[in-house]
Length: 562
Image (cartoon, rainbow, N blue to C red):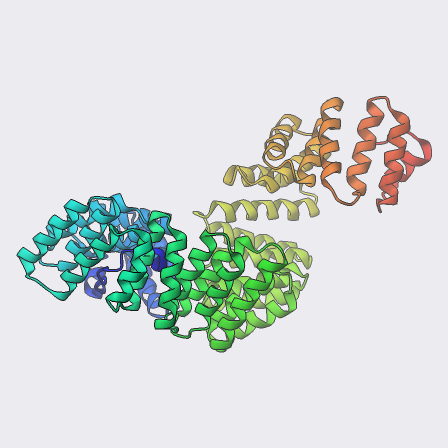
């Protein structure tokens, strides 16, 4: 919520980047780049952030020095509050074209959102040099100086503004606010009241106080501001922020909900806030809060595809899959040009085992996005689950050909290929696919674990398997499937003492007994010479639902069988 807590309220309004300026920088002799660039512009007009980023990213994969594409991607990053990525892309564009003031304006806006005051100061100096007749840059520079406790320098900047542009109400107000910055916190409310300050000025003063860490004083200012303009959503967002800072989560949520209930608050801002809460969606209170915010959003925008898609995502997160499917479908009926909605719908069908539906929806999506690699992966997965292995392999090849730059997708595709080849009993090619999967994404611990288990089952390349399993287990010791696999590989290497340590980690992490893990535990104990305890673990494995014939034989004959 940077637009609320940031105290730089005298910000310039970034001039719309003229389309002719953007196009001119993309005039390179490449039909593919031109087509992708204009496709990105079309998606931009439709407010389709994901498709916009996708097209401009593809431009950059062909032409890394395309400054206009970097600029467009940075704008989307900023809108989605991806400030690290926004900074990287905007800075790259500005470095390529240091005389382009639009790139610098965007970079300044990003630094404001990130509260990166020192970097902002440097950009403002460049803007003033490029466009010395723009008063807004000077006011912003003075604000930066105030934030960095350079009051005398700020006064000098205000004097320079007066000398260059003459006296004005805006300048007088700015000087008054500078004085407020030096006023004791307890006196600010009285000062604002006596001057009949506007809501904007109360917000500015609250921002100053929050910047100083005077959150209780900021709260007093905002509580005075709220009655002045109860429909100002920025006041309620600021209240939510300050309540959060002083450790009052209930009041913080109530203020946030009040902001959401104001229809003037932009839909994109609401979507962004709910999205930012996803990672914190644990516990009943957090879930109830997100549900409440999303319900307000959907009630106000019942036919907006973004609102419906967000609601579907929230439902999906709560594992309310049937309801999520319905909302994804409603969103697509209104606008079928948002790829993430197609992805959500297909993923939900696959997750709940509706593989034939997933195949149907994948084919529909491919008519809209014929070059989207992940769709071929989803289609291949559904075909694999419906026992159409040869078609699945063809679509994996398509996914790999189209997603060559997406190493995570490539890794998943090779891992799926390995599963299919195992079912076809083509074990040699399956091993090669697993190796390639790990190569594509060497920190994907799930894939490493699958590869290690496959090798261990075949007693093949056990040193490689142990390397994979150890890396995964040390990174994710809380994951029982991973630690069990490491124990299994160590068992296969006849390192029984080490295997016992890791199988105990696996069993302890599991809240309920797992028949496979317990069988492995018994196998390890048997080779450590503790036959009685081995038999007990095998019996527990059977009681936990493991009905393998080999386990039954181990129990009946009280000895290990491979």
